[in-house]
Length: 172
Image 1 (tube, rainbow, N blue to C red):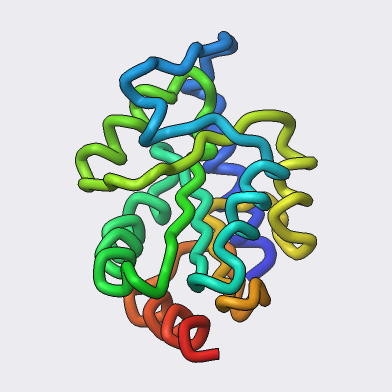
Image 2: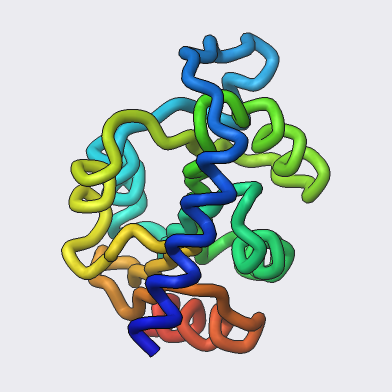
């Protein structure tokens, strides 16, 4: 199991590196409300802002990550289904040169709430979101209204798993 996890992580890194463009990409004014640059600490502040109000599902994904793409529609559907009680915080971990691709992907999936584009170095970003996260994608964590983590996992998941933990977070 651990060996296959590392193989998947390695393949994701290879695929991502193949399309990496080492350039700084300025944020397009037309995408500022949909896809905002954010560090791990800034994402954590966003998560904390819902404490006492809504459950939160954080999902770190990338357009080059097949399991991320597969589970993405489930999360969008669940955000719409539980919109009064849940806030989904999507974080694109795409490389800077893929920002436009990430934005296009969000638009294709009718995401109409603010999402985030990872900035900064990987290790501080990972540590800001979870001590238990290896950095593999996708990464999901679900928090209840008190800000307590009810579930977290690496790798893709099916609709039922997402919904089970969302319901737990809402009803905790």
